[in-house]
Image (cartoon, rainbow over all chains, first blue to last red; front, side, top):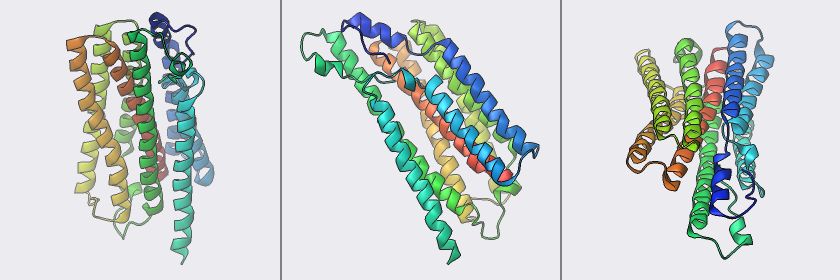
Length: 112
Length: 207
């Protein structure tokens, strides 16, 4: 969201309406379709296997997450200070810590 | 998405009522964003549980044996399309087109309902094939993770219908505008969570 150039009611209203465009939604949708199709083709046709397949799958998922953040959720349009982005990053750090930490700890748990 | 609302600090006085109202709506929007991040953490813990437990099948059936991909692929494309149509609803709203807005919300809700129908059908089938929530740690984690997502979609449907009723009664006001922005954000978020369910639970399960 752009910062308001002036503080009148109408300016605030207009900048709100500038949110997203048909173009950004169509681009986001098209990219998401492609990023969903890639894992399907790879897994269902056994193009890749094992670790390399997992890497491509996770990379496609993360890319699609980023695409939707920008094209559907308009993260880039946020004005400064970027509170939404900061909260998001904090949340992602917590999520990654929980997921990676759980996997790490439980790997050793199953060993002994 | 929420604006920072910070300009009210820079200009503490001299705004008309509408501007103050607008700031409050923006702040509420940001509050919802913070809720979404905490919801992310909830799903993070469920994903962690699933990843840790998905091999603990207690001699019972595994996901690789029972998952039927055509249904899951259909669910994925249905939810992705509904995320797109909820964006089109917001675009109609920004043009001041109430009919278009309600129309796209109806399309979104119908797609969401077909997603839930497919998911419930899948769950019933899995239970019949001997994979209930009590079968093994693997299936407990599966139903908790996928079920929590499905519950979110169901709550979103009820919520979306109530917003459509409010739009029918009050039209597009600053309050209903914020509500539509929030439900659309929530819907995009549910699709993002589904991408990871699809990738980690189903794709990695069957490969």
